[in-house]
Structure formats: C-alpha cells, structure tokens
Amino acid sequence: MDAELTRRLTQLLDRVEHWLPPAPEQVDWATHVAALWQRHPLGGRLVPVPVRDGVMLDDLLGIERQKLALVDNTRAFLQGLPANHALVWGARGSGKSSLIRALLNSLAPEGLRMIQVDRHDLGRLPALVEQLRHLPQRFVVYCDDLSFEGHDDAYKALKSVLDGALTGPPKNVLLYATSNRRHLLPESMEDNRDSHLVGDELHHGDAVEERISLSDRFGLWLGLHSFNQDMYLQACAQWVARLGTAEDWNAAARAEAVRYATLRGGRSGRVAWQFANHWVGSRRLHAAQR
Image 1 (cartoon, rainbow, N blue to C red):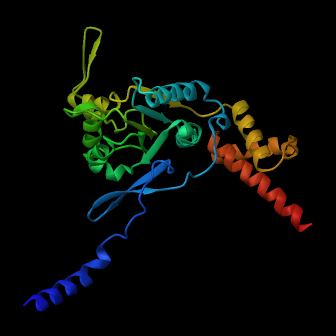
Image 2 (cartoon, rainbow, N blue to C red):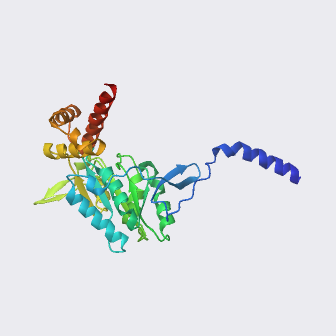
Image 3 (cartoon, rainbow, N blue to C red):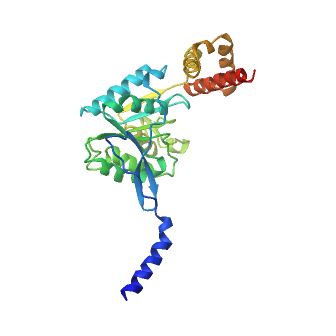
C-alpha cells in the first residue's frame, strides 16, 4: 500500500512540477539594494536585480527643487525621522523614473533599499509590506507609471497600505510612485455632475472625492514638467558629452537637436537622451566607415 501511494504521489508531482516556479535567489539585503516583487501562481516572491544604470542625481537637470525635496524626505526616513509617501507626477519623458533610479543610486550607500511592484500586483501589496515590517533595513516600495481606470479596484489595496488600515504601513517602509496623472484615476464629466457650489465653496461629488482621496494619501507631491528650449539644449549638451566628448557638441549638433525635438513633438530629458544616442552613435558610425 505504501509503495502504491508513493508511486501515485510521484506521478502527481511529475505532472505539477512544471507549474512550480524555479527556486528564487534569496535576497541578501546586506549586498542587494534592489528587488522586484514577482508574481507566480502560488503568490509572489522577491527577486534581487542589479541596478539598471549609473544615473545620479547630479545628472538630472531642470528639477533642482524636486530633487532636493525627495532627497530630504528620503534621508529623514533613513534616519528614522518622520517622512511622507511620495508621488512624482508629470509629463511623459520628464524624468520621473530617472529621478527614482538616481535616488537609489545616490542613497543606497546610506542604507536605502528599493522594491519595485508592478501596478497589476498591487492587490498583494499588503502581504509584501507585512514581510518587510520586522526587517532591520529601510525600504522604498516603488510603483512606476501608476494609474488606474475607472473599473480598476487595485487602488483600494494601495489606499489601505498608505494609511487606511488599522495597523498602517510599518515604520521601515515608504511608498513612492510615478504617474502621468496627478490624481492617478481618470475624471469624467459624469463624475462631476454631483459637484456643486455652496456660496464660494466647491463640494465635490462622491466619485470625485474617491479619486482625490487616493493621491491625497501621498504627503509629498512633486510635479515634473516639459523643458523649455534652453534647458532642453543644456540636457542635450550634457548627454552628448557623456556619451561622446565635449567636442561632439557644436553648432551642427545644436541645430540637429532642435530639429530632433520638433520631429518628436516635445522637449524633455528623455528626448535629450535619445538625441544624444542618435548624434553620437551616427557620428561614430560614419567616422568608422571613412
């Protein structure tokens, strides 16, 4: 009987083994500074990842006030002082994600650890935060490009972790998010039909209050905006010199940078970086072919 049971259990394991995730590398927070929360059929796990690039805070131009505010908030958190959850919002390509990466690169030596969570996995955010509660390190849980559609209930888990639950987030966890939307959820004319004026005071409808209440849970709002032409050209010059040499930035490069932004329909740090790749790469290619 025992042999038959063993045989059947072995057959069952053979059938389900390919559904099981491979054993993950354990995160050693003494050496790893970043990890991804990765979903799998049995729940989720933390997977250590190398830092994507070496971008530092000094590399990011045109957002000095925002950098200072985010660094001060994060350093206060790392030192056990009161600090706020942060929402970095603004135009596409304005440097929101780069600011978070530069923050990690710059403050990891001071003890900052970061975990990125995909928007679609926010339903498991409370479980992740509970895993971190009793660890000695201090973590920023980061969600990139955060936004919700009207029928999406995942934002309720985020609200609960931010400050809606009885226990609240642990003292060693902050949530940082980037978004193109300041209020994270879309607003429609239908939502605003119940809004009305009483004297000079605006009373929002329930649907509008629900949307605003999510972003209100982030105590630090940082808005990033498109560059004017002077700042865009400064960023182009910096990245061209970084990828090539200072001699690569000249009158021809400046004229091409202006044309490049016009064709792309906007000026931003991302467009400046893409132009620098285009300019330096094409010049080196043509020089090698001569």
